[in-house]
Image (cartoon, rainbow, N blue to C red):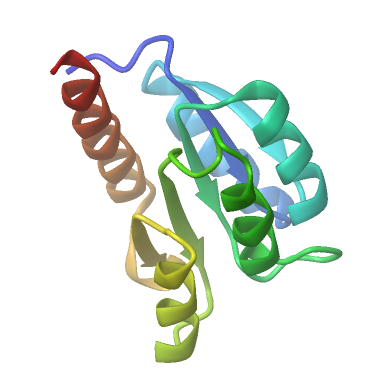
Length: 133
């Protein structure tokens, strides 16, 4: 399934990781909007209305859980799929992310860029099917 024209909001404070993810997503035909922390990510999410959000949890200013809390207060933000991609590998963090409406939880050390892109494409295909029905 082609993902051209799909907009991904990437919220990641690590510049090297952000660049690698952005390039992988762009080369898959997606448009990428980048935020470096939860504060700017929330502003971008509510302004840009991306099709999906890829979110780190450990960031300066507002972290990922704070971002999710703010996002889910918005009518549009309640529905947008969020995939957490983080170094935080604890049951508490996973549980908290899912409580705040995360679709998936990926630990950076356990996934490749290709797997992250595949997970995003999979979720976008699910969203597209929902829109078609």
